[in-house]
Figure 1 (cartoon, rainbow, N blue to C red):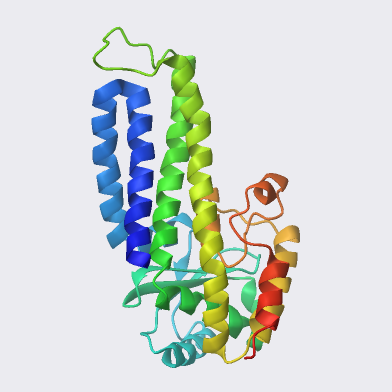
Figure 2: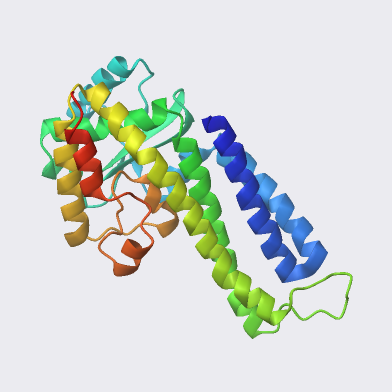
Length: 282
């Protein structure tokens, strides 16, 4: 099922890029952006973990540097019946975490510097189990591809806005079929929002499943439930510098302190997630 979702996601976002290319340069622009989309699909699939790590400025951590973290992830990985992922740390005081990689054999888990200071052991284990569940369920690839395309579409949207100001979209060649300044401006506004909506739909649907699977891996739902409440509270008070296109990869929206981020939240309500966890018999 997740394989189908990956191909569907790639197709939808490729269409958005091709349409933006058409707005910028007619048929030639559409062709160029189609080739760009194909390249992004390839690199997004095979290098999804490296892309996510780069977007979040995370750095690798060794076992000697974080023995407790390695011990917890190693034990939880065994319980989940999967290889141990590579471990990274994201430079932020805000407690948070994310997982990435196209499959369990090529995966990574990153935790922020703040999470080890603000959560107790059972809560950290709940968060780590949630991220391992994402990897085991093979849905982290979907999130990383969405982040890659959303970032590109937002960047191109900005280019289209500036292009419209300087006359992009005017075309004397009818066969090239430029969209005109009005069409360019509409795409510059609508398409980034469309990409954001795709991100929202993907992230919201996968968080509940990872919560449930993570509770099973950890052997308890209370640790993760308590952690989510603490993480949400911290996100409102401790800012985090992160590319908005990558925000949906984290266990809790790192931008939830911003009012606009709440309006376009990529995560389901924390209270709803906590209630579902506490209703589980684990």
